[in-house]
Amino acid sequence: MEYNIGDIVRTKKPHPCGSKLWEITRVGVDFKLKCEGCGHVVMLPREKALKAITKKIEKGET
Image (cartoon, rainbow, N blue to C red; front, side, top):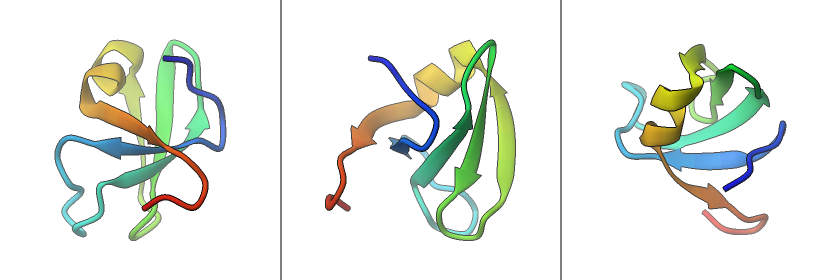
């Protein structure tokens, strides 16, 4: 699956704030993800990010 900046994705494990939704803010060798719940930003290596993401959320879906 192809991911682009601005996509919202769901992860397997929730963030400590309780949200499983993240916005992609950087794509490349590393993925930069921003938590939709609290706004915390994390950078993950591409391989780890792809394993953590379960699906891409379409507009209007929660």
